[in-house]
Length: 139
Ligand code: DQA
Image (tube, rainbow, N blue to C red; front, side, top):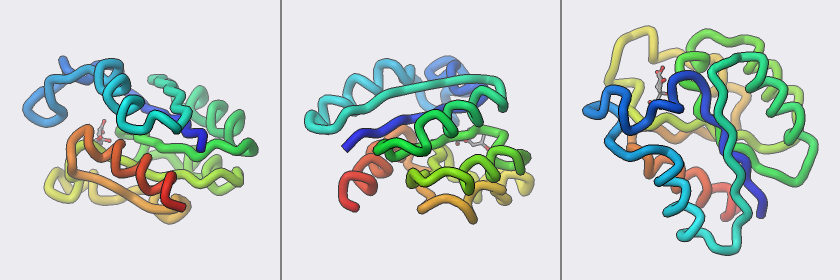
């Protein structure tokens, strides 16, 4: 199994950004743990703060044998273009959020991405990514 994890805007600041909400661990550090948890799974990671870059990456991997785990950050709640990119590709895409977006502001309750994703995992901190990897490995 090959998996691409894509993180969107502001997620490069994990560990520093609002630690009470998103935790104190950097994603790079967590990625190391995640890879050790799934030694037989090839995991790649990409982060960008630019909507177009995220779309290009989904196009690039979306017709390969990769499964995609996507935390699109705030673009989740705004980006029809990202939803169109997910719908356009063949790879399964799992939407992930670190926080439970349904416990938060109303504008975070709507996702343009959920209807075109294989499934959604949110609210388990960084462990949301492990659950998403497990879901892709299981299928
Ligand atoms: C987030 C939730 C989004 O609402 C927010 O804009 C983020 C992070 C999460 O992982 O909890 O940037 O996707």
